[in-house]
Image 1 (cartoon, rainbow, N blue to C red):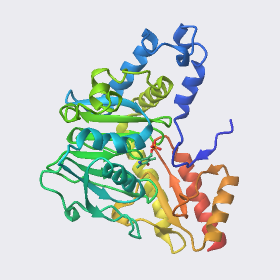
Image 2 (image 1 turned 90 degrees about the horizontal axis):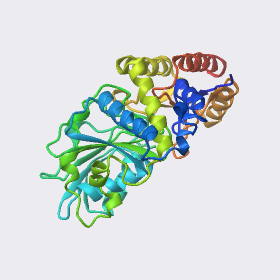
Image 3 (image 1 turned 60 degrees about the horizontal axis):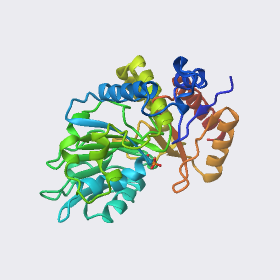
Length: 358
Ligand SMILES: *Cc1c(COP(=O)(O)O)cnc(C)c1O
């Protein structure tokens, strides 16, 4: 089989098992004589898929009845808008932490809805980093505090989350379920699925049910979290195939065991960072204390060498290592489904490349 080591930042590598299972039941889903793509979203086949997916994510995130698990089309970017539309009342202020490109997009969208206070701004700092909790200048009585748990482009990640009086809202698109954390303590979590959870175009949304009640009555029904809660994300026809894929990924996570996955993620990242830290050839772009375990960003001594690095890696079946077009450099995205063998291959390649070109 010609599978490559896929370091893409998103859409990204999916568990092979999940892909194979989808392939095996694509034509005839569980004896229904139909593909799941062709099943009614109100029928018993899809119903079981939807219910198990909700259940699995509840389980994986350790959630009780206080929070709802929602599937909403439109990816994380729609959530940049939906979060303030639902949670930022008129006359209120929302605190946002600007830690990079994704946080900035969330801020821009929130500003179209209401008052935004930028509680800390590390967005333009080099080396890249997220601020510490101590640096945050929070608004008393803020509607909520918004953070980006992992800046996918900058390769910077919150290692511990701030404790805030106002509900904490997080864009966890690129690191949800990659490490242990207390999901219950958040007011709202959203994550575009295409990094750790499944296909693109859909977001997993976890919202505290009481917060969803804040939404103004005049907000279009389709944009209210309330609607998705009341209708179990089945108000309209949801992206059924995407949710089915997320179900397969969640099953794989439960089968592997989240603790095993989390440990593996930490080890994968540590092995790559060890090569970066070993000598003067590779240079990490994020501050050590908050460098990401999901998106490992680094530079080489010159752009010409970076280009050569990406090219030679690609010849050895390591794809998607080019850094984001806005920052350049190298980015190795090693999400949950990225295999340990791929990290071993990269580490060996990095050492060899340094020997030849250092
Ligand atoms: C990828 C990403 C997004 C954008 O997701 P879309 O599904 O394309 O809207 C937002 N935030 C973060 C942190 C991301 O990594």
